[in-house]
Amino acid sequence: MFKEGSTGGCSLKAYQGANMTLLALDLDSAPSEGSFAGFTMGYIAPGQTTSRLIPNLLNFDGTEGLTESDVSPIQTFKWIHFPGSYKQVVAGVGEYVYQATPRYFDSDHKLLPLDPGRTISVPIDVGDFTKGDLSIGFTRAFLKSQAFSTRYGVGQRLKPKDGGWLFETGEKAGTNKYGDFTWDDMYFWLGYTARRQVYEMLDTALADDAVEVEMYAYDLNDPGTAQRCLDLGKEGRIRIILDSADLHTKPKEDGTPTPENDFEVRFNEIKEGEAEVFRCKFGRYSHCKIIILKKGGTAFRVLTGSTNFAVTGLCVNANHTIIFDRPDVAGYYSDVFNTCWKVGQAAPFRTTEYSTATKSFTDDNLPETEVNFSPHDQARANELLDSIRDNVLDPGTESVLFAVMEMGETSSGSIIPALRELHKNDAIYTYGVTDKSGGQISLYKPGRKEGLLVDAKKANRELPPPFQEEASLGLGHAIHHKFVITNFNRPNARVYCGSSNLAGGGEKDNGDNLICIKDEDVATAFAIEALRLTDHYNFRSIGDDGSDDQQTMTLDDTGKWVDKFFDPDDIRSVERKLFA
Figure 1 (cartoon, rainbow, N blue to C red):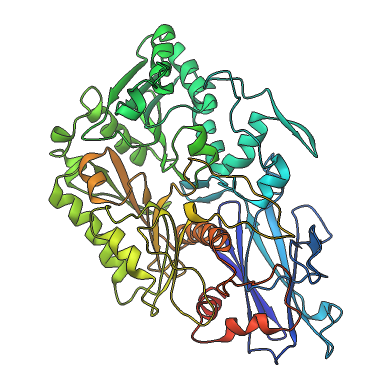
Figure 2: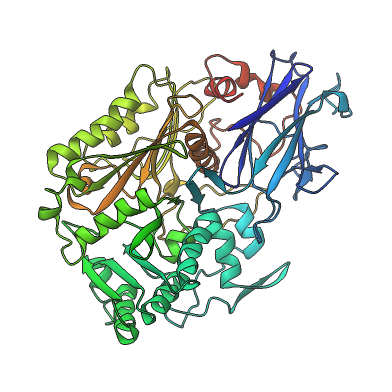
């Protein structure tokens, strides 16, 4: 979904995402040398009549602090905007009117006054992403960012130092410039829409005594999720398949039980009726993250995706959730759950129809969706991964964007090696981020059409002023997503997503679900997520060797910054044309 407008040789296209908007700009022709300063950008929020400017952390003199883009124009042709502060009562949801004005220098390289006659305005809805009976959510995953460090501090803990894993999240966690904040406040900001969707699923069940829950959990140590599950267990209305691999069952060296083992003990002490926890790991892991709601024995809604029900999964990792608000899809997930219930072994599951066949859902009120459940036998695992690789490498594929947690050289199957090599093919626009690249890193460098492959875990660059110190990711994953998008803004767009790590070992031995959604709007929402993460960690990866978009931490007052956007041999020019 996008809206666009143009005036005076400048255009603006606004793409709708999941509580975020991609703003793509273009000029009809390259500006004269040294003349172009950038864009002043702003928006009119829902219910407002006056425009708010989008601020810029960079400026012309290197002073610290945000300045508005009327005096510090934004020197890029794409920008991703988040509404409100997400402190957040889903502030500002509704129609936004985005505005962009091209800005110019005079002959002395001084910024000329803004010309309102050049301003472009484009209205577009901003809020949760839904299309028919499908909804998408994302975690913010901005622990390592200026925004988190400014709001919560570089040394802010993510859990109380003492007090165990199941603590009261409504208690004070710290103090910032807005006053005291609780763990919930911080988690709400970090977890963004994905955390809210997880909680809303369980709260729907808690609010209706007739609703029962079936749930797959890999990790289960988020206090808010776990307490809701315990409350449902006390009422006899939840059954959970919980992973039993060593990392979730083996006590620590001091004898402390894992949160999952402790949860199981607590659950069994208070459970009533049909409530039960079943531990299994298939061939290696029970790796799904799924919540199914049922009423009167009929499933009516299901949440799935990559998001683990853990503090790291909801608040540190970059993750996605998908909700199908449909009895047919939810019913299929419930059928798989009950096939696995009290079995949970790879060998018998590989022979079921759920493992051997793809389930397709086609309906006027649902984007075309295909669902596959693993574990599979080796041939079936290869078949599914090869189909993704073939779509990625198809000569008709114009763009591939992705965020995939594990892309190391030990990853088996055909798709991960293909993605690792894809950036070398400059005939295709490719933009991707991972937590383990297998040594294949490709950062942005001017004058090259080669795609980007960024390793987020290696993004340890200390940014000079005006940037401030950022929080460390520690042991947590930056990128936990597992999604690949082809042709995001074309009618033949596809998104491959879910809990599968997209590797042969997982498809053969893990309990997982791999989803393919064939829809341009859904692909665009995922593409915006891939762009924001890749750009974020590319900026934090580059050195001082001339490989950066911005070699100094000030705006360019010579106008040379724009040259790469009109150089046919530069990926910035490719993406300007592709997006705008």
